[in-house]
Image 1: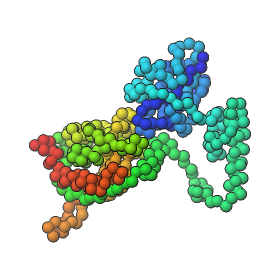
Image 2 (image 1 turned 45 degrees about the horizontal axis):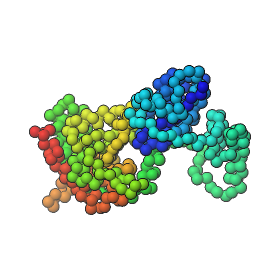
Image 3 (image 1 turned 120 degrees about the vertical axis):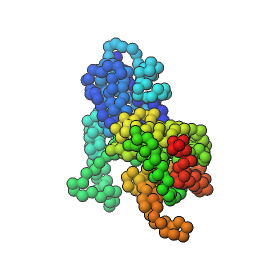
Image 4 (image 1 turned 90 degrees about the vertical axis):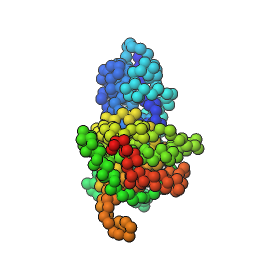
Amino acid sequence: MRREFRVPDIGEGIAEIEIIEWHVGLGDEIRSDQVVATIQTDKSLVEMPTPLSGTVVLLGAEAGSLLSVGSVLVAVETDNGVDVNASGESDAKEGRLTPLVQGAPLLSMRPSSRPKASPSVRRLAVEHGVDLNSLHGSGPDGRVNSDDVLEASRASADSSTSSDTTPSTFADEGDERVPLRGLRRQIAKKMSESWRSVPHIIDYRDVDASKLIEARRMLREASPEHAAMLSYDALFVKATAVALGRHPLVNASFDEAASEYVLHRRVHLGVATATSDGLLVPVVRDADRKSVLDLATEIATLVELARSRKASLEQLSGGTYTVNNLGAIGASVGTPIIRTPEVGITGFGRISERVVARDGVAVVRPVLTLSVVGDHRLLDGDTLGSFATTLVHLLESPDEFLTTELA
């Protein structure tokens, strides 16, 4: 009996996954709950188990390919075992997929619209730059075969030769074309969507960081066990969380489809983290309710999990605002892009000594530049400016949120 397991809806608006690596091949015997593939979602890298047992007779896509929610991930042949429907819902009810989906329910599935073609034909199509979705297969049941791909490739080449168009991307001999894969493809998609759909407004502010530097020094001396992990990130997160509490409209999400926005009562701050694969944003929940020392410990843990690609979907989801320590990469100022559906993000530049005027006298002070970015569909200049003013005040007067810790 043939049984299929389809890509489940794991929530967070994820409509498709990318197959990063298969851990099984055609003809392999697999058992229930065995990990069959490593997949990339919009949020994280995940090992995908299956509730099926039997002999693998179909893999839904090649490594590097995308599969939509509801598409067949893997199929097996078996002579016995508990019946499993095409969506895997019976196993979901038994909780077998809980390690993967963080306890999220499996919802209704969409049938796959992928063209029928063997793995070798798919490879051939990639090599020749042919879109299988554009072909009408000449094989049984509309299956695309190698002749279909080669014919389409020749037709495309003939069309290119007969025109005077210039290639969109210049390449010298020896240059390498590298396809977007994994996290980098997801980042490209997410940032492109945000930049196209969100009208960004930016408020740049300079902060006298003298008291902030002193506060960090005193915290390190008071808690030497936290000294190594007490970076400026914890102070930035705490100050931002307090400022968001005073300006709740900035701690919101924009729902374009429903023409409404959501005011979040809780403050969950994402911390932009550079990894070897690209940018990830682990989330510190209830950041406004935690001390700077607690935040320092939690941020250090989350950053390490993100960089090792071990952060869970839950740890990378649910943010209400994002902070980005641009100074960590040596940047004095930058222009962060909003992570939709959030409506704001703040970039914190590198602290550096500058000559500034104080009471008509030129003095040297450590200065930090902020890039406070807002979604202009919800936040006007005065709203964003008020939030930026509060954030500057808190960074220049950290005793307002460190009173108990420095007592």
